[in-house]
Image (cartoon, rainbow, N blue to C red):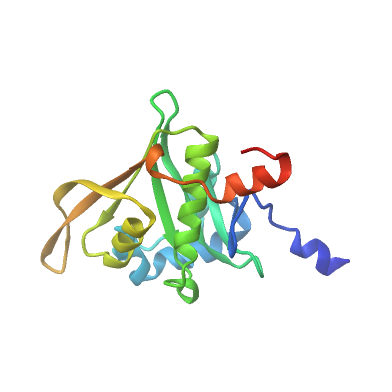
Length: 200
């Protein structure tokens, strides 16, 4: 019985084929702090942690703040292992737009398709449940794996903030990308609602 209850520790808000989105848990503060203190992760995100160490307390404060927003943990379906987080850094419900933040910081699971599925789940949530019309995100131009992932999912480049970040004497742009509701095809939520309620 103990093993069974342990498996049910994390709530499954949105479930895909290999990953699911779950409410942020403060129990994971050490794992998150480790992720954002990894220079390979933090520079890709543009986090200040490549110049300033993020300790457990500051990461806990961050997690408490994002728990109030539409931010989710990304977990592996087969064993509940934490991959990172994904969700909305900002939401404008009146004008129906939101900006995404994405972190797949567990190096074991990068470039294995889990980020693609997590993105599709949060897009499905934003367009199908929150009724958003436009979802945007930003990525540094040197982060080609992330840029290619966003394009693969359907995001389009709509602008740049030029020479926004300097690393090792070279400056880089921030690329702004977005997607419209009509450009997205629901997969996971549509499938679940059709199965449960026979909605078409």
